[in-house]
Image (cartoon, rainbow, N blue to C red; front, side):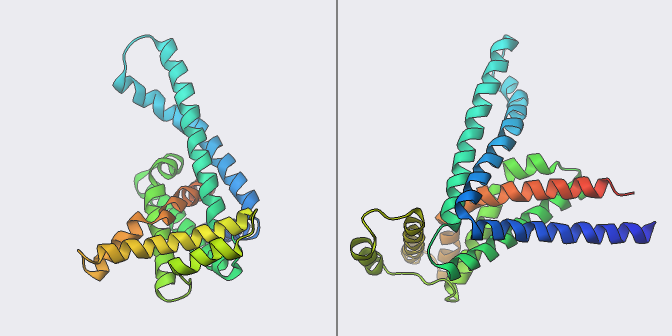
Length: 251
Protein backbone atom coordinates (compact mmCIF):
# COMPACT_ATOMS: atom_id res chain seq x y z
CA UNK A 1 0.00 0.00 0.00
CA UNK A 2 2.83 2.39 0.88
CA UNK A 3 4.64 1.61 -2.37
CA UNK A 4 1.43 2.17 -4.34
CA UNK A 5 0.89 5.53 -2.64
CA UNK A 6 4.47 6.61 -3.44
CA UNK A 7 3.98 5.65 -7.08
CA UNK A 8 0.68 7.51 -7.27
CA UNK A 9 2.25 10.57 -5.67
CA UNK A 10 4.96 10.43 -8.31
CA UNK A 11 2.33 10.28 -11.05
CA UNK A 12 0.54 13.29 -9.54
CA UNK A 13 3.77 15.30 -9.37
CA UNK A 14 4.58 14.43 -12.98
CA UNK A 15 1.08 15.46 -14.01
CA UNK A 16 1.52 18.74 -12.13
CA UNK A 17 4.72 19.57 -13.99
CA UNK A 18 3.10 18.54 -17.28
CA UNK A 19 0.15 20.86 -16.55
CA UNK A 20 2.50 23.78 -15.84
CA UNK A 21 4.43 23.11 -19.05
CA UNK A 22 1.15 22.88 -20.99
CA UNK A 23 -0.01 26.25 -19.65
CA UNK A 24 3.28 27.92 -20.62
CA UNK A 25 3.17 26.28 -24.06
CA UNK A 26 -0.44 27.40 -24.51
CA UNK A 27 0.46 31.02 -23.78
CA UNK A 28 3.50 30.89 -26.05
CA UNK A 29 1.69 29.23 -28.97
CA UNK A 30 -1.78 30.80 -28.81
CA UNK A 31 -1.43 34.14 -26.99
CA UNK A 32 -4.84 35.54 -27.98
CA UNK A 33 -6.76 32.39 -27.06
CA UNK A 34 -4.69 32.15 -23.88
CA UNK A 35 -5.68 35.70 -22.93
CA UNK A 36 -9.36 34.94 -23.53
CA UNK A 37 -9.23 31.73 -21.50
CA UNK A 38 -7.37 33.50 -18.70
CA UNK A 39 -9.96 36.28 -18.54
CA UNK A 40 -12.85 33.81 -18.53
CA UNK A 41 -11.23 31.56 -15.93
CA UNK A 42 -10.44 34.47 -13.63
CA UNK A 43 -14.01 35.76 -13.95
CA UNK A 44 -15.56 32.35 -13.22
CA UNK A 45 -13.33 31.86 -10.18
CA UNK A 46 -14.10 35.38 -9.01
CA UNK A 47 -17.86 34.96 -9.24
CA UNK A 48 -17.68 32.18 -6.68
CA UNK A 49 -14.87 33.43 -4.47
CA UNK A 50 -15.63 37.16 -4.43
CA UNK A 51 -19.25 36.65 -3.43
CA UNK A 52 -18.27 34.21 -0.68
CA UNK A 53 -15.65 36.63 0.62
CA UNK A 54 -18.08 39.54 0.61
CA UNK A 55 -20.74 37.52 2.41
CA UNK A 56 -18.32 37.30 5.36
CA UNK A 57 -16.74 40.73 4.97
CA UNK A 58 -19.77 42.94 4.43
CA UNK A 59 -21.35 42.40 7.90
CA UNK A 60 -18.12 43.81 9.34
CA UNK A 61 -18.91 47.15 7.69
CA UNK A 62 -22.70 47.27 7.51
CA UNK A 63 -25.69 46.42 9.65
CA UNK A 64 -29.34 46.18 8.72
CA UNK A 65 -31.69 44.19 6.54
CA UNK A 66 -30.46 41.04 4.88
CA UNK A 67 -32.11 41.46 1.47
CA UNK A 68 -30.19 44.59 0.40
CA UNK A 69 -27.04 43.01 1.78
CA UNK A 70 -27.48 39.92 -0.39
CA UNK A 71 -28.13 42.08 -3.44
CA UNK A 72 -25.04 44.17 -2.69
CA UNK A 73 -22.91 41.05 -2.32
CA UNK A 74 -24.00 39.79 -5.74
CA UNK A 75 -23.50 43.10 -7.53
CA UNK A 76 -20.17 44.01 -5.96
CA UNK A 77 -18.83 40.46 -6.29
CA UNK A 78 -19.72 40.33 -9.97
CA UNK A 79 -18.14 43.72 -10.69
CA UNK A 80 -14.92 42.83 -8.86
CA UNK A 81 -14.70 39.46 -10.61
CA UNK A 82 -15.24 41.15 -13.96
CA UNK A 83 -12.56 43.76 -13.33
CA UNK A 84 -10.03 41.13 -12.24
CA UNK A 85 -10.92 39.01 -15.26
CA UNK A 86 -10.30 41.91 -17.64
CA UNK A 87 -7.01 42.77 -15.91
CA UNK A 88 -5.83 39.15 -16.03
CA UNK A 89 -6.77 38.85 -19.70
CA UNK A 90 -4.92 42.03 -20.69
CA UNK A 91 -1.88 41.05 -18.63
CA UNK A 92 -1.86 37.63 -20.31
CA UNK A 93 -2.11 39.20 -23.76
CA UNK A 94 0.74 41.64 -23.23
CA UNK A 95 2.85 38.92 -21.62
CA UNK A 96 2.74 36.51 -24.55
CA UNK A 97 1.78 38.55 -27.62
CA UNK A 98 4.74 39.78 -29.65
CA UNK A 99 6.89 39.26 -32.70
CA UNK A 100 10.20 38.15 -31.16
CA UNK A 101 9.83 34.38 -30.79
CA UNK A 102 13.12 33.98 -28.89
CA UNK A 103 12.07 36.55 -26.28
CA UNK A 104 8.63 34.98 -25.97
CA UNK A 105 10.17 31.55 -25.42
CA UNK A 106 12.21 32.86 -22.50
CA UNK A 107 9.12 34.63 -21.15
CA UNK A 108 7.23 31.33 -21.33
CA UNK A 109 10.02 29.58 -19.38
CA UNK A 110 9.96 32.22 -16.63
CA UNK A 111 6.17 32.14 -16.57
CA UNK A 112 6.13 28.34 -16.25
CA UNK A 113 8.62 28.44 -13.37
CA UNK A 114 6.53 31.12 -11.68
CA UNK A 115 3.33 29.09 -11.98
CA UNK A 116 5.08 25.99 -10.65
CA UNK A 117 6.46 27.94 -7.69
CA UNK A 118 2.98 29.25 -6.93
CA UNK A 119 1.34 25.83 -7.17
CA UNK A 120 4.04 24.31 -4.96
CA UNK A 121 3.61 27.06 -2.36
CA UNK A 122 -0.16 26.53 -2.29
CA UNK A 123 0.29 22.79 -1.95
CA UNK A 124 2.69 23.29 0.98
CA UNK A 125 0.27 25.67 2.68
CA UNK A 126 -2.55 23.19 2.21
CA UNK A 127 -0.55 20.23 3.54
CA UNK A 128 1.01 22.05 6.49
CA UNK A 129 -1.74 24.47 7.56
CA UNK A 130 -4.86 23.15 5.80
CA UNK A 131 -5.04 26.39 3.82
CA UNK A 132 -7.56 26.35 0.97
CA UNK A 133 -5.74 26.67 -2.40
CA UNK A 134 -8.72 28.35 -4.10
CA UNK A 135 -8.91 31.20 -1.60
CA UNK A 136 -5.21 31.68 -0.98
CA UNK A 137 -4.38 31.47 -4.67
CA UNK A 138 -7.03 33.89 -5.84
CA UNK A 139 -6.71 36.52 -3.11
CA UNK A 140 -3.11 36.33 -1.88
CA UNK A 141 -0.83 34.82 -4.52
CA UNK A 142 -0.80 37.43 -7.31
CA UNK A 143 1.64 39.95 -5.69
CA UNK A 144 4.40 37.47 -4.75
CA UNK A 145 4.14 35.67 -8.09
CA UNK A 146 4.23 39.01 -9.88
CA UNK A 147 7.45 39.88 -8.05
CA UNK A 148 8.89 36.45 -8.89
CA UNK A 149 8.08 36.86 -12.59
CA UNK A 150 9.45 40.41 -12.62
CA UNK A 151 12.66 39.20 -10.95
CA UNK A 152 13.02 36.45 -13.54
CA UNK A 153 12.63 38.86 -16.45
CA UNK A 154 15.06 41.29 -14.82
CA UNK A 155 17.61 38.49 -14.37
CA UNK A 156 17.34 37.52 -18.04
CA UNK A 157 17.75 41.16 -19.07
CA UNK A 158 20.77 41.52 -16.78
CA UNK A 159 22.61 38.61 -18.43
CA UNK A 160 21.71 39.80 -21.92
CA UNK A 161 19.11 37.15 -22.75
CA UNK A 162 16.47 39.84 -23.29
CA UNK A 163 17.79 42.81 -25.20
CA UNK A 164 16.69 46.24 -24.03
CA UNK A 165 16.20 48.86 -26.73
CA UNK A 166 17.17 52.47 -26.09
CA UNK A 167 14.65 55.28 -26.16
CA UNK A 168 16.07 56.38 -29.52
CA UNK A 169 15.61 52.91 -31.02
CA UNK A 170 12.05 52.74 -29.73
CA UNK A 171 11.31 56.15 -31.20
CA UNK A 172 12.76 55.07 -34.56
CA UNK A 173 10.58 51.95 -34.61
CA UNK A 174 7.54 53.97 -33.60
CA UNK A 175 7.99 56.56 -36.33
CA UNK A 176 9.54 54.62 -39.20
CA UNK A 177 8.99 50.88 -38.74
CA UNK A 178 5.57 50.52 -37.11
CA UNK A 179 2.77 50.23 -39.72
CA UNK A 180 -0.07 52.71 -39.79
CA UNK A 181 -2.39 50.00 -38.49
CA UNK A 182 -0.15 47.75 -36.39
CA UNK A 183 -1.25 44.32 -35.21
CA UNK A 184 -1.72 43.49 -31.55
CA UNK A 185 1.51 41.47 -31.67
CA UNK A 186 3.45 44.44 -33.01
CA UNK A 187 1.98 46.75 -30.39
CA UNK A 188 2.74 44.22 -27.68
CA UNK A 189 6.35 43.91 -28.84
CA UNK A 190 6.75 47.68 -28.73
CA UNK A 191 5.05 47.74 -25.34
CA UNK A 192 7.58 45.22 -24.01
CA UNK A 193 10.45 47.37 -25.23
CA UNK A 194 8.85 50.37 -23.56
CA UNK A 195 8.51 48.40 -20.33
CA UNK A 196 12.17 47.43 -20.44
CA UNK A 197 13.23 51.02 -21.14
CA UNK A 198 11.00 52.31 -18.33
CA UNK A 199 12.41 49.73 -15.90
CA UNK A 200 15.96 50.76 -16.78
CA UNK A 201 15.02 54.43 -16.37
CA UNK A 202 13.60 53.75 -12.90
CA UNK A 203 16.74 51.86 -11.89
CA UNK A 204 18.93 54.69 -13.17
CA UNK A 205 16.96 57.30 -11.22
CA UNK A 206 16.93 55.24 -8.03
CA UNK A 207 20.66 54.63 -8.35
CA UNK A 208 21.17 58.32 -7.56
CA UNK A 209 19.90 57.77 -4.00
CA UNK A 210 20.35 54.03 -3.49
CA UNK A 211 23.10 51.51 -4.06
CA UNK A 212 22.96 49.74 -7.45
CA UNK A 213 21.77 46.52 -5.80
CA UNK A 214 18.91 48.18 -3.93
CA UNK A 215 17.98 50.22 -6.99
CA UNK A 216 17.75 47.02 -9.03
CA UNK A 217 15.52 45.42 -6.38
CA UNK A 218 13.28 48.49 -6.28
CA UNK A 219 13.04 48.39 -10.08
CA UNK A 220 11.76 44.82 -9.88
CA UNK A 221 9.01 45.87 -7.47
CA UNK A 222 7.72 48.81 -9.55
CA UNK A 223 8.01 47.05 -12.92
CA UNK A 224 4.89 46.57 -15.04
CA UNK A 225 5.90 42.90 -15.26
CA UNK A 226 4.49 42.45 -11.76
CA UNK A 227 0.99 42.47 -13.30
CA UNK A 228 1.69 39.05 -14.80
CA UNK A 229 1.27 37.75 -11.26
CA UNK A 230 -2.50 38.01 -11.77
CA UNK A 231 -2.16 35.55 -14.65
CA UNK A 232 0.22 33.15 -12.93
CA UNK A 233 -1.91 33.04 -9.78
CA UNK A 234 -4.98 31.90 -11.72
CA UNK A 235 -3.26 28.85 -13.16
CA UNK A 236 -1.27 28.10 -10.00
CA UNK A 237 -4.55 28.10 -8.07
CA UNK A 238 -6.29 25.68 -10.42
CA UNK A 239 -3.31 23.32 -10.64
CA UNK A 240 -2.72 23.31 -6.87
CA UNK A 241 -6.41 22.72 -6.12
CA UNK A 242 -6.58 19.77 -8.54
CA UNK A 243 -3.33 18.30 -7.18
CA UNK A 244 -4.53 18.52 -3.57
CA UNK A 245 -7.85 16.95 -4.50
CA UNK A 246 -6.01 14.11 -6.22
CA UNK A 247 -3.66 13.61 -3.25
CA UNK A 248 -6.48 13.55 -0.73
CA UNK A 249 -8.29 10.98 -2.84
CA UNK A 250 -5.38 8.53 -2.72
CA UNK A 251 -5.98 5.25 -0.88
